[in-house]
Image (cartoon, rainbow, N blue to C red):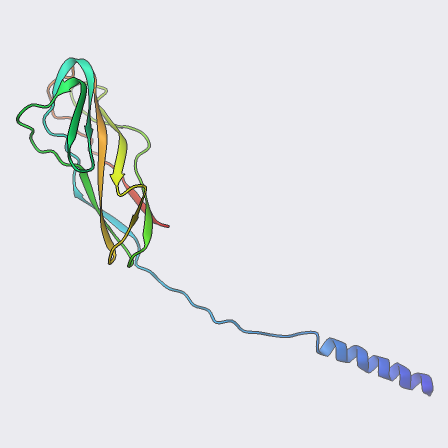
Length: 167
């Protein structure tokens, strides 16, 4: 009988240890849904009037809309319309976001092949911060003009693509 009592006591201890080996806790679950980030074009990029020469050249268009000629190009007194591209970014509050510009040059269609726009820059760069859910991003670039480029209006109809993403 003595052994049965000890066995029974050990059996109870074994069950008791298993009964108290589990615990449960609960955590609350929360999510904050933010306004999706968006971008819309406000102003197209326009380099204005440029005179080509027998030698190649470039025109750098700053994010502020100021042009700087280099090499075989000149800027006539009649500048025409000159604007850096401008985009309106919208989203939530004062979130930050990254700005992605084209990595490769964009080819412009016209009479002469090889007219391209590249070396894109933005202001702000490479990130922006929304103020009350909005910010303007201006984009400039470098126009490459081959030697003896024919007079024409050169254009890229597929557009300059700028991408924004929340950080």
